Amino acid sequence: MSQTSPWPCLRIETTGKGKQLSTRVILDISVSPNAPRTEVTGWHDGALRLRLSAPPVDGAANDAIRKWLAQQLGVAQSQAELLRGQTSRRKQWAVSIDEASACRWLASLPALQN
Image 1: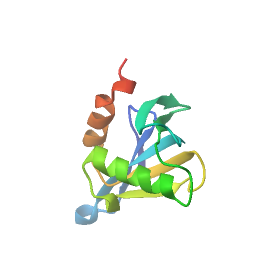
Image 2 (image 1 turned 120 degrees about the horizontal axis):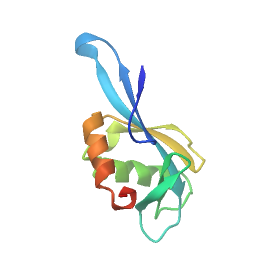
Image 3 (image 1 turned 90 degrees about the horizontal axis):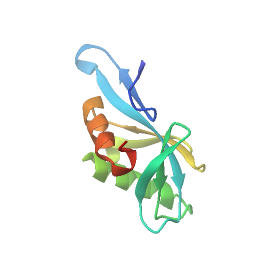
């Protein structure tokens, strides 16, 4: 089951029942590789726009995004899973974190401040 969020790039996915209930966030990310540094710069068509310092070669960009997401959200790298966009600029990542933590992180990003 998927729920909407106040952030256009974020959806909540809940699976299982009872004690087996699990929640994770789904993030839509638009990536621009080969940037001088990795940073969120705003929005691109409802996705989080991420300038990435890694090159788009041999999975290096995806590995860098996984490490960056884990560091930013305070989770293990194994808790970040690439769902779609292995070789494209538009990617969808699932991160095993609660909605409130993801929303706090998004609200703290300077590029997303009004």
